[in-house]
Length: 189
Ligand SMILES: [Cu+2]
Image 1 (cartoon, helix red, strand yellow):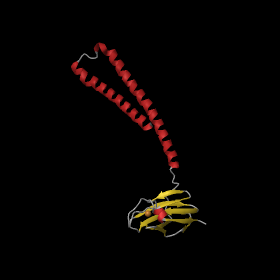
Image 2 (tube, protein in one colour):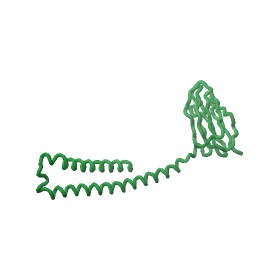
Image 3 (cartoon, helix red, strand yellow):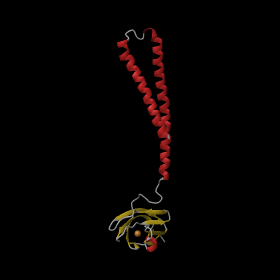
Image 4 (cartoon, helix red, strand yellow):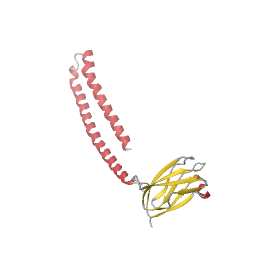
């Protein structure tokens, strides 16, 4: 909504500026050629219109500038609020302590390690099978962090921040988890 309003303001402001400029050009260039006696008896009306346009222009700039500032303030306030909300809860952008290789094939999931200390890890899924698989990690503070589904001989990595607790690793391709592509890893004590 804010963006729409401020765009509209810019259009209005631009429109007023255009009217003002066209008016000024017409008065300065066109009218003297066709009507040398201008403004003559209409001097008062002419001056009135000029002053009116000028004042309207000033008011418009003042008014819209204030509204723009308010809009910007609200936008940046919203942005900083949003920033704290989007602090990573599931995955962490921090440096991973370690890469854990997880081999996937029909139908098992084989992580290189099943006992980890708390921290940030990259889980590298390697599809050692013959059909597509993916890797989903779920547990405390990590809700279904998933790689894309990848084909045979492909790799995909997800970064997760692990805390004390049990994490489930599984393949979310229909039927695969039940067929055996599921395991747990333990973090901390
Ligand atoms: Cu699978």
